[in-house]
Image 1 (spheres, one colour):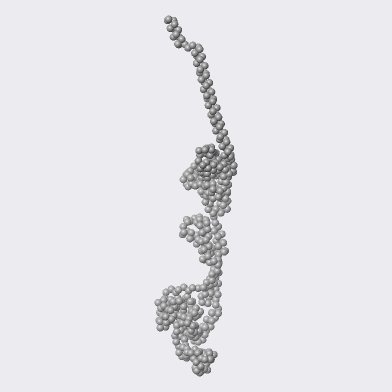
Image 2: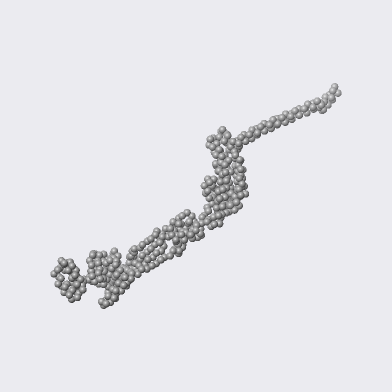
Length: 494
């Protein structure tokens, strides 16, 4: 029994050979099973990946066309476009899944289709963008070189490194958008990682709306020459006694109008302020316009011609000789006095004694004067003159008394005519011509004073005789400033 127990204990300590073999066989079979399961799983995953790839390829074939980045002469522009195309490619799958997903809403599908279509058109759209900015840059350089536009510091800083500082993106519809950003806070679009300053949509690019404000220059010197050559002229005619002055020069009213119209045209005000380096205030614009008009007037000649009425001068000389022959003294004026109603009959002559004085006159006789009421006086000796409320000259004159005669009065006239009285001869002839009487004849040795409102011609004659101009004569009569005389002027042009 003891031996048997020892054997059993040994058997427990030492496994039999056939048991080890069975274990090894089990382990090998388990490993094979695991390998088979892994192989089957890998084959399943491969088939799934292949199916997904096939689905993706079918979607690509159905919805996607190649995005080719056409090359330009600008390396920085090629890189900017390449980055945008690469990011656009990553949107294909999500958009196609929305389109193919039966659970997607109609609105989401339409948005995805529109965005996918625009991404497919991205190379063509980018060409529109490229052409626009290339043309803009070339136009800017040409304008600065030729002096037709001002330099734009913001534009030059933004594009100092080509298109490196410009960002391209896509809007909600998948159309390209140009972004101008600033990082250093100087307000200029000079860094693609900075804060957004402005952007330009594809629609603006298509319509060629400039991304920067390129201020146009204007040839103001040329404008000055054109206005000076074509400005309407004005002719003024001013009569002063025996001298008539003709002045032909620039029409100032027309110049004001042309100047205002010019500076109201788009861009002119801004350009002028920039040329003068002034701020845009009303006062500064007035200074610029005044300078413009002065420059125009400097190119326009003003022609002044004077006409002298030699007939009037000769007549005055003859009158002076006659006066000297008759022993009359040289005409002269006396001190002004306030008019009285007894002499001037304010109601009839419309004189205001608070406004005017009566100026005494000696040595002036009017051969014939016709009053405003139609009466005619001969050999009227002027004693004084003044002016009424209508600006008309009123004379205080001494004339011979007259009477209306009949045929029975001819005897008296005949006696005087026979004695050599020339005036009586004229009156007698007039009476005889009338036949039935009614002639007005002078009563010898009797005079009367009358106030008469005279014509402009008689007014000019009086002042000429007194050796003064009409303006001087009027100034003497008015107690305060004389009303300005309205002169007839001829205006040509504008």
